[in-house]
Image 1 (cartoon, one colour):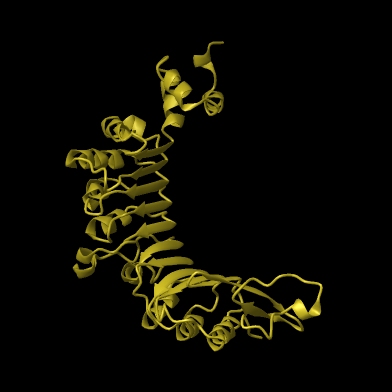
Image 2 (image 1 turned 135 degrees about the vertical axis):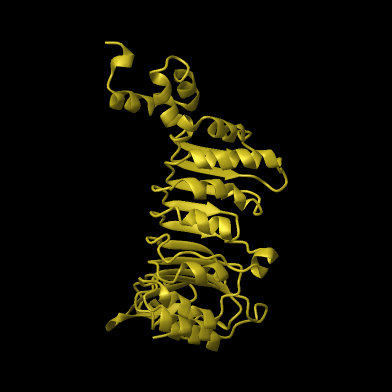
Length: 331
């Protein structure tokens, strides 16, 4: 039996163990084995200027049958190594051709969100689960999201530009991205993305998230369990407001720029630790780069003791809790 007559599943299994160079050679042997090799060779594409493989974008733009093999596409273009506008036109065609994507990462010039425009008007990305881009949340991105019904993870507008802040927000239909579980981006965009969607994990960049913005978290259709944010609000009132609107947090990371150069007092740490005890499901906390540890309180397993350095297990009773030191805490 010749290799060409072997079952496709067997050929795929053999080809999966070949190196990229071997797959490229296999693709040139015959018309039967070419798609077998290409299906694996182009399954996950990562392109960048420093890898010197940006030419793959041209291949995907000119060969739709190859682009349909791509499941994961990542491209990063450094601002120090810009490309010509014609390259982005080819990138737009490549995105249009990659209709079977499950993961898409576009770390390119933030002003070229138009590369999504043609795809948004012609096809649906029914299998796309993860989308990361360096674009602001504009009309092109919103229309693209309309075409991603299975999306679970989204990162957009992570570095808000002045133009984006001054532009009117685009409309995103309430029925778009109905299964979204994770969002990374600005607080401005979060106001448009989170309400009415099952977002459990939120990471907000760029600052600007204040106490008055916290009720936004309660507008997710499921409890928020992971939150990372930058704020200029005082930490203690901020944490108290968080507990009111997001009491089920499991992981919390807060970077506060309020009085950042002022040394904190033991009283401040005690206040923080006191608020943390109200988060009954919280297991990890970080405040302005300082990791906090916790353990179950003796005689009351429902409560946790928090302090600004992880608690260590010890056989000595006097070491169980670091009370009496300036590293405190709450009980």
